[in-house]
Length: 534
Image (cartoon, rainbow, N blue to C red; front, side, top):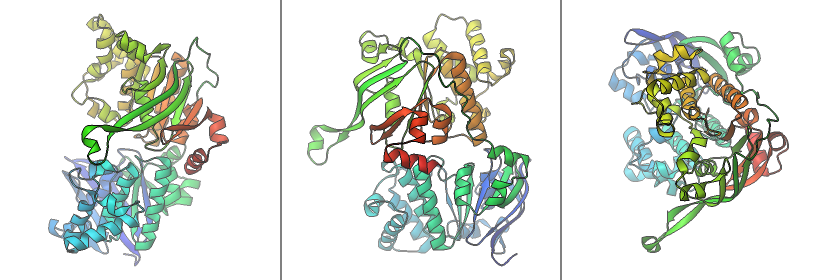
């Protein structure tokens, strides 16, 4: 083993039930180096990294993973416990699920320090606050006493990093650490990891499908496709002169702008809001909170307009009010002000008990198709559910014909006649991109005029993201659909939106055409978002 090589992986193979999913990969990580393991979902990135520490249940692992000359794959469980956390630590993709919701973040860091470092409770508590402070969390002592749900996404990820660094590991495995974060927070977390990596002299194995992130962060890149390591080299080599066809495809998978620049105007706007405000009740401190609630203004006086066949992109960081605005448009939150969908006022529809007709005109596609599709329902039940509610008079044959046509419309099958085999399958049997197409089919089958797209591609790989955005743009051209697109991805806005609204702390700070807002932003916050994405 070369003197400065910290981890040497040779012939790593991983199988489940005799079916091999990782096919003899080789790579090295040098001390203090940042290596990015890149590929689409299912390429074997995460399972390869976690299998080295034998953290994948039911996996049959062979080959060698030499950490300073010791083969991790030959160590016993007791010896591996000393490696996990002490020498190799992990930052997981979604901190909300990785952190225990029943304990404060400080208590969870203290637990690691007591178990791994043998510190007393008081020593560990002070050290936990220092670790949180080192990650840049404001008011670290107060945040140490907070539960995970009381922190923002960026703060939760910083707490996860603090926990990973508690034992001063030599190698940090960062598994998609910024996927769920806003573009500006991604940059902050990357800068934080780089600073901490230099301070502690540790190596980082970054597992990701975010190529701009790799170019900004990593020293070297290894590209995986279907369990094979197809290319590796320095960031400059791989990005500037990719050799393998799969690598070239990943590099070319940026969202394309295929929309009609000037769709024909309809007789009335699809969505119109004036002085729209949404507030939430919040507890008041002290005795006052026993008798009445305060209020938090989440959306402040928003004026929006979406014409027929056009897309309004709403961009901003977490907590800016984007999703609250979407829920109000869907009629799922009480609001003040004026809000019309397809010429009908939400309040008037409620008073006349006509909300069902209005909900047929506005449908939604959520961020994560795996959680938004019921795992207990078949494809036929999921896609056909809206027809049972809005067109209960359809017979079984007509309803099935409409479902099969919807599957063909979203590109899941080439011909509606081929859809029969799909109808009795369940969401877990599909890839992420296929599940999102199912979610789009479910929304479209009732014939809406407005779709609310809440981060519709943020959970998808770059290649699948490009395909889903192309599908949405094709459907818009063919059907004259209007979209309210909620996202923090400037590239998605650039590809999809005709008009853009920028939100910060519940207020619309800038709006205009896509070209005007992204190419000549006037507000400092907009400029910061655009610069962070470039």
